[in-house]
Image (cartoon, rainbow, N blue to C red; front, side):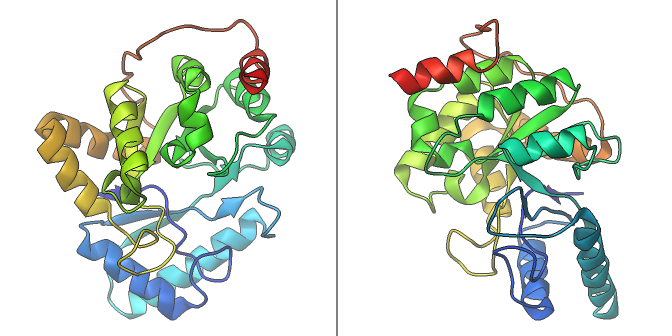
Length: 265
């Protein structure tokens, strides 16, 4: 089973497909990349979009019915990717988050590609204190975060797992993002790929997961490619993921301090 952990395949939920036909085309593209299971992850906590967890599950069930009617063999589970902000904190307190696994161990989180949220470190601390493992998606596309990676290193040392976007690793977002992917792999902070597909195009918003695995195999060998694949299965099953040794292991004493110091630079 090859799992795509990050995509916007559900129609009329966020900035993904506009209808079920487009969703089906995205599923077909995913299958062409070797994907056999999809974690459907619309943006949550983003003020551009408004939907409930129940709404996500209903749309996911509708897509599954259409796939069954068309004899398309693809596993599909509802989840979300959550913006690191106060909305996430509120949902955490209200027990209203939609996790990546049934055991509620792993939560997909993200930031804008253009900034580092001021309260991101505080929210991460709340997740760690609640015993949740945050999975930070596509940080390689955020140059502000990559320039001052002490925050990423801190989070990784507390157990945060990084998911790289397949399109960034394969060069669709340019040389800088591709180099950042390699830096995160080399540092031991990266554990997964996700397509982050929003459509079925050949561009950066399409699904390039199979290409990313092939490139990982060429650049890092069979063991690393197999590890990323297994990590994805472990995540959706809620199983323990083998920890990496992260370079520059240094833990600031309090959450919030590292980000405040970084913003002063």
